[in-house]
Length: 336
Image (tube, rainbow, N blue to C red; front, side, top):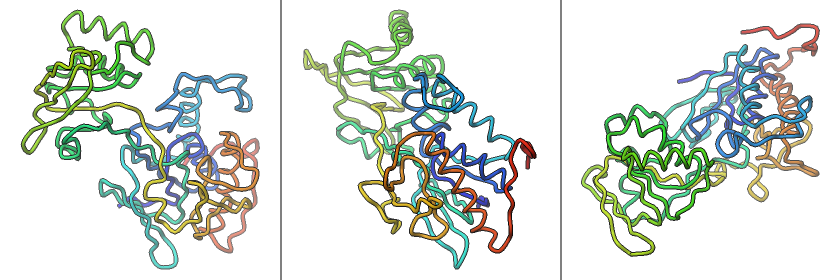
């Protein structure tokens, strides 16, 4: 079991800044996120998008902001559990919480902070006959956690965005066979990536099926074949494969959080603006996932919330202990 002072659900920019603010108060954080990488929406959806309203940065690319926040948090030795979804939150006696993920990971924390942005990002699943049967390690996955898992394996990727294109390019040298299926003739991804995929297809390194939709999957204990249909000719193609990864984007949902007895208004968690605490003592919510009067869903507002939350969490974890705030310009940043 992982032991930490503060467990933070989410790994976006507000969660990362909370590591820094908590670290200044000598509290260690552990972050849990369903996405396979740090950065939340900024890294998953628009890493190359410029952001203009971060103080001190006339313009900063989303991924550069994440990289800087990670570097800022490094002195405080945070922990990360990525690619796993938080399933349950249980309180032990009068104090600690236990968080359990869908993979069975347990985190013991004195304070829980929900910083999940718009919620838990879940994959958009296509309507494909038999798909559910081969989930959970039987051949169908909705994200790539460990590329080496697919070395020498046969792979089908479905999708037409940046993720589908990027993973096709990367895995073309790892998989023994790779098929990219897209329902259209044009892609939504970066032109350079499209050109690279087209070249791989021309060179025979991948199979590219355009105007084609997934139809069904089949197999015994594991996935064995994927059946597709051409939208124009209605011709069916059956591809023997070990893995299918549909990459049709992600949709935000509160997920299991809805069942934690938190006060929720329109898919957002109600908080006290004194310190962004929820109706459950020891549980806070910061960033886009919370709601209050005059709420603004801005990253810089989330940074403010992270700072006030951290000072309240310190008092919660250290009742009766007096703390005098000292500026970083005086003390600097002292590593753990």
